[in-house]
Image 1 (cartoon, rainbow, N blue to C red):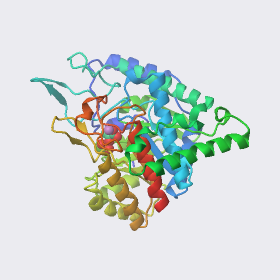
Image 2 (image 1 turned 90 degrees about the vertical axis):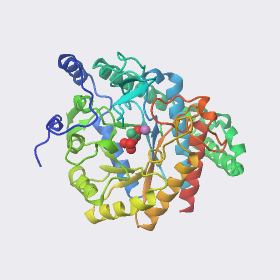
Image 3 (image 1 turned 60 degrees about the horizontal axis):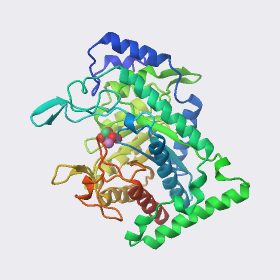
Image 4 (image 1 turned 120 degrees about the vertical axis):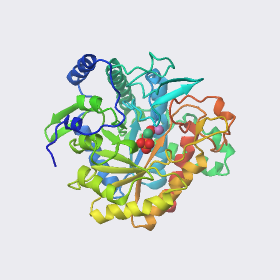
Length: 443
Ligand code: PEP
Ligand code: CO
C-alpha cells in the first residue's frame, strides 16, 4: 500500500465534497482550523477503542444515537440537555435490562455534513444546489444560501466545541434529577399493551439509582460514572484532515472520538477509505444492501489490517425487508477473514419512506422489525449484535410514525423539524430502549 499522510486521500476520487468558489478563502479557513486546539484527546479515543473491543466480545453494548444532521440553531442548553437525557435514560434501561455496561456515543458535537442523493433541490420550478449540512452551506432556499462557505468550517468547529463543553459540564455536574421518577416522562406508556412492564422497569432503574446514591453516600450529581463519547460521519475530508494531529502512537482525528464512513463513500479504493486507514481512532463503516462479500473483505484488509481490538465497527442498515437476504453472507465474509469486528445495527436508514403528502418518515414497527431480525440473524450465524445506532432526539417532535401513541400521517405535520432524516422522538426512543432491553433479556 502507498504511504499515508493526513492529505494522501487527495490523490483519490472523493465523492460528496463541496467545491468552493475561492481556494484562497478555503485555505485561510483551513489553516485557522488546523491551528485551533483539538476537541478530544488521544487518551479518550483509546479509552473508547478499548470499550468497543469489549463490545465486540459481547461484554458491553454500544448505544449510538442523535440527530441525522445537527443544526447550528440547535446548539442551545435545552436541546443539548435533552439529547443527553434521552441517551442516558436509554442506556440505563439497557444496562438494567441486560446487566451489561453500555457505551454511550452521541451523533453530536460535529454531525454537520450530509451526503445528498440529489445534487439539486427543486421547488416550484426553481432548482438550487442541495443543502449539504451546516458545515457546508445554508438551509434557506436562496441561491446565496446554497453557496458553500468556508467560514462555516470554523462555525461548525466552534459549535462542536460549545456542544462538547456543555456536555462535559453536564456529565461532571451530574444529572441530579435522574433518580426522581417525575424526570422519566412515561405518559406514553399508558397507550401501550406493555404499560405495566414499562412502568415497572423504569421504577427499578430509579430505585437502583437511589440505591447507588445511598451506598456511595452522595447525590448522583457527585458520582462521575457517566461517560459520553462523540461521533460524526467523516464526510468532509478537508475538515477532517485539518483536525488530524499526530500523537504518541500515531495520527488521530481529534475532532471526534468515533468517526464513521457513510454508505455512499465506502468504496475501498476511494478517498474516504484512504483517509480513514491512517488514523488510529476506532472507526465505523455503514454497510447497506449493495455491499458484497468481496468488497467487504477488501475493506477489512485496508481499514482493519492488524485486527486491532475495537478498531472497526460495521454498522449495517439494510431495511426490514432486506436484512434477511443481505446480512448472512456478510457475516460469513467477515468470518472468512478471521478478524473480529463489532456489529451494530442502524435500523433507521433502510426504512425510510414517504407519506402520500411526500413527507419523509419511518415507522416504529419497521425499525423495531429490522432490529429484531438483526439480533436473531447474528445469533443464528454464530455472530453477535453488539450495538444499535439510531437517529433520535430528546424533543417531542413528530417525524416517525407509530410507537405507543401510534403517530399517524397527519401527526407528522404537527412538529416536523428535521432538515434531513426523520428521528425517533423522546417517547419513541425510550420505548425502543425498553423493547431492546426485552430482546436482550430473551437472548
Ligand atoms: C446517516 O447516518 O445519516 C446516513 C446518511 O447514513 P448512511 O450513510 O447509512 O446512508
Ligand atoms: Co440520516
